[in-house]
Amino acid sequence: MAPVRTGIESTDRQRLAQAVSKAMAETYVLYTKTQAIHWNVVGPMFYSIHKLTEEQYEDLADAIDDLAERIRALGAPAPGAFAEFLKLSDIKEAPHEKQTAEQAVMMLCADHETAARTFREATQLADEMDDVVTADLLTERMAKHEKAAWMLRALVQESAIQTTGIAASSDGEAAGKQRQ
Image (cartoon, rainbow, N blue to C red; front, side, top):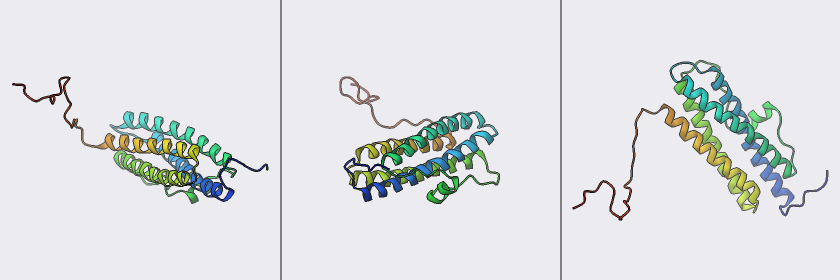
């Protein structure tokens, strides 16, 4: 194999590839878990969960490919066996026992939060190594995991609309403040 000469030392690239491999593994396990919930959800929340998880697993599938290609660009082989993904990942397979739709949604929420933390750690490593390409990819994915967790959490919260803050009117007065 031809040497990789991108300005990042070989040992640093290896460490970074390992961190990205863990992020990819968590993405892959989360992808399969999200699909399982998408396929098997029933009940009053079916449509909402079915549509949201479909959007999420499609995004995760694209991410898996991007992460694998980045690992290759760093000069390392990308993991490719499910057993390897499970070994690298802090996210576990979907449980085999029956659970409520709310439990499944909150499990996915927690998994996206786990992934966000993993991506944050890997991003910090990429930043330390001045690898802006990897850092950008990881930062983008971290933001998507944080958004996915928020959306899942909002799906099962008690129905409510809460607006906060005070908007300023065009003349600088606070909106809602009575004018004299």
